[in-house]
Amino acid sequence: MALGRWPRDRARATPRRTAIVFDGAETSYATLDARSERLAAALLAGGLRPGDRVATLTGNRPEHVEVFFACAKAGLILTPVNVRLTAPEVAYQLSDAEPSILLASPELLPLAEQARVVSGHACPIVELTRQGLDSLGTRAPLAGDPAARPDGLPGDPPDDAGLLLVYTSGTTGRPKGALLTHANCFWTNLSLDRGCELREDDVVLQVLPQFHVGGWNVQPLLAWWKGATVVLEASFDAGRALRLIAERGVTTMMGVPATYLFMATHPAFASADLSGLRRVVVGGAPMPEPLLRVWLDRGVSIVQGYGLTEAAPNVLCLPAEEVAGRVGWAGTPYPHVDVALRDAATGRLLDGPAAGELLVRGPNVFAGYWHDPAATAAVMADGWLRTGDVAERDASGFYRIRDRAKDMYVSGGENVYPAEVESVLQGHPDVAEAAVVGVPDDRWGEVGCAFVVPAPGAAPAVDDLVAYCRGMLAGFKVPRHVRLVGRLPRSAVGKLLKNELRGTWEAGG
Image 1: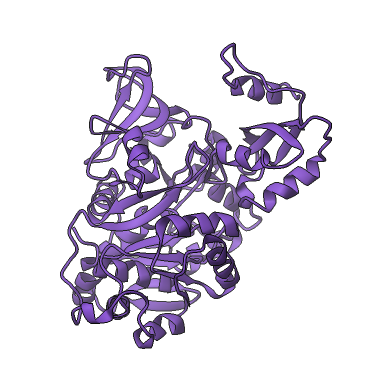
Image 2: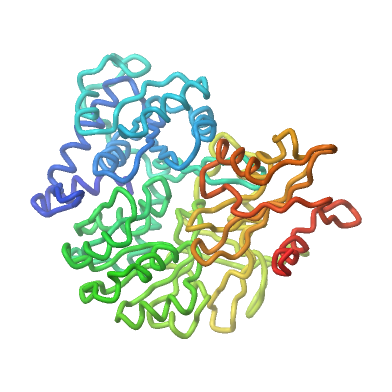
């Protein structure tokens, strides 16, 4: 199940086939395999040992793919960091993961340097470019004793060896590193292929960022396993995506609802040639019916799904033939994945049509949170992963998500946990209390609305609070709306009543 075999096998079978197209340049499978092989050897020669972390701070680029497969071959753990984070947020992840090296694209080197200083974690920073990666073979040791490493590469890592460490926000306000193994990634890609087949002649347009688990395990890795071509985009641009579909013969892609909204509302959409686009995959949230109809009317087949980082991420799939008749539903479990509903009051598993907390079980479920056994134990129950999402199951066995995990909301495909935003707001000297809820937004699906109780004698300006958040949080986490209130609604036992806050927003308060 070791994923390092995938480019090796492809280089033998289809060496001249194009693996990656990036900014007009093509990378063959033979080149991808050779470069990742050299990089794996260089990292081990530099003193890294299996299990060490290799952090990256970059947009999508082919060199990042080489790093992924180099880690897979050398038994290292790729730790991709969200490029939208601020220096303190990046610093926290560096302190927690303790990578042996940080690879950063040129434009993000200042952020990488600042975060390293803030974190206090001493690791070399190398420019994530062709020249930067090539230089690793001639650099002084990165860490440890290179003499302790044998020449060449070790054998394939064990199936349960860590491969991806992806940080996901938590309800305590601190992100947690979800560790995914080779086996997790193998099985989630196998189940994806059986539920949403990818062919060797497919051309995949990848616009999802590679710091998300979906940027690897929802189409790209499967494409490289099957010998397909990935058109890799550094970032998402709706107009450019529409052009590439025609110019590169794109047959399939994956995105969040906002991806397809921006494309559908682009002036070029009506005249864009989508005839070769046989299927698109939607994740992150259900596609709204009006948007769904727009794409179906263009003759594009749509597959919807549900997943979470801890499940690597694929859990539920709504096949194309069911999409039009089951708007808002997430589907049935992927092959090799089991799901169940748990009664919140009794903890027992529910049969038949029911509603309860969605549980997931299978070889795709993660190994645990990095250095946090208590958090891992809190989400595991008798072998089941507790998603925290409340789902409904109908008599036919189809599921839909009724409530997002606890108070989380999804803004433009990004998960936002209010606890993290609230902790920042409450650090402002003019704020006594703060509560954040997700509210509907036509552009981003949901955005944050912060209800703020000023400190005694203080009169904070809304613009100042927003600016304060921007200095501490990634842009998608910054509340779009701020309401100053005299108090926050609480129950008799002091529990914050966020439903009342949402009702206040809906009433225009």
